[in-house]
Image (tube, rainbow, N blue to C red; front, side, top):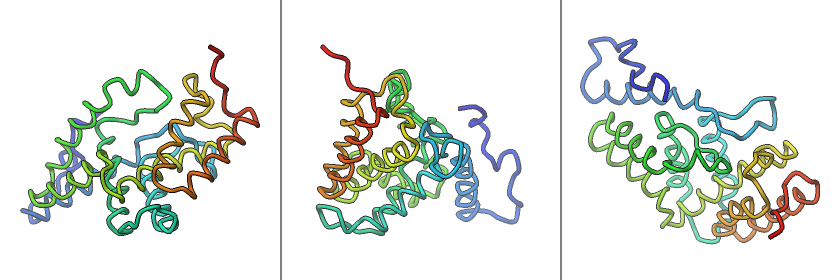
Length: 216
């Protein structure tokens, strides 16, 4: 990424009086400000611009808080909110990888692991391990909380696309089957939200906002 080689606190160091554990924590918090600059492909519903990663993460936290009652498995809402707050932080260094852009996802895993190795180790060792474990848990999707959070990570852009009458569904690589593949993540987390997502996709197809797959 751009000037990611420079930490924000390298460019403007914290006062010398702040040291040790607190200095590392504040440096990490300062570096997290870069998340506000990482633009996603998804357009906002309330303004004529794309959303950034920090806005996306906040929106997911709100969705977890409000929609947890629809999870097919009981979840710890507080733990799930931690997962969504952390899950895209690595894009500070790895950048966003739009799902409908084949070139963007080719080396996505490698870029994101390298970013996680770099970013989270800024923290004191105990917190670095805790935050990295949250990121790994989200990626693996082996817990009820991670599965639900993954579902919300699919639902949020689909809702934005609907509200924009197409959004990223208009990208060249997006067809009904690929949109349906994203929908599957919601279905895996919640029967109710999966049904709502199916309605969104069916209506998107009917309105011409989602392209049908080319005939074989």
